[in-house]
Image 1 (cartoon, one colour):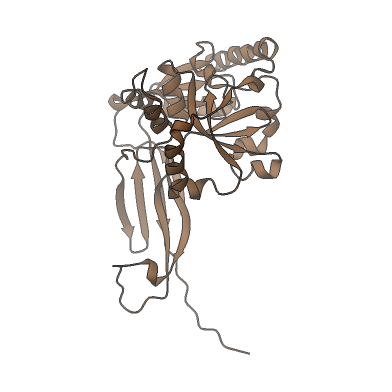
Image 2 (cartoon, one colour):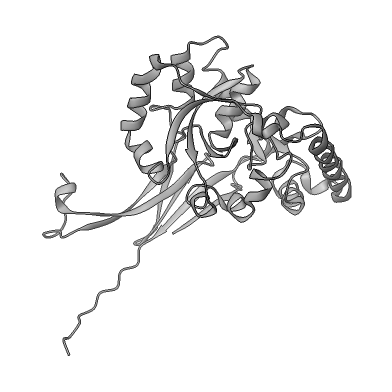
Length: 315
């Protein structure tokens, strides 16, 4: 089974989207490659000029290490109003929540957006504009809660192709598109599913999307935004200062590896111990956040089924 994000050859630059890239963050080589291969006209831009631009942003971060040292420790993490208890219980009862947050202690909090640590270096602004259209400033707390932790949402289209008898290709414009964990299903779990004979089990791979709940990982007094980057960016761009968030608490590196992505797991000190890590508010700093025009991309999941049958003989 393979997952990749590609640029569809059939699409044109007329459908380009706007993306905000956080300059000055690891890795410079990733930025140069992205611009050259994904940005409209990026192959004609001078890499030396791009490097100088990235270096200036990196210098800004060096200045922020002095002027804003310790700011990540001051991120507000407030309790949720008791009037939202029924909504919290509805999220806890949802299978998306149970499957996604089953390893570590969790709580529901109202967190300060500006001081959330970020590990993802880009957000698609075109997507956040569409999200923002559904939420006006001054909305009720219940509506804000549902925006941050949605139990229902419109899903992007998925194209399914059968490449051969045992190969399938699924494509979607969302970067959240992914394969879920394989599951073993017993006959009693398969009502309505028929086969050419009595079934003993079915092994299946669900392909779809993440829970998309706005969530963060807390270590000490620092909070790292884990999921919901576009929702957090949208809220901040609309003038909101706080968001409802599922917070997972970690106290050890081994716990951290259960929930964070590879970059954070590989270098946790950069995010949880440096004097001034990258923060959500940096996307809105013109010295750090650069707007790029990007060719449309789509995520693909290819599933290949291989079956080996044999007969064992007792010795």
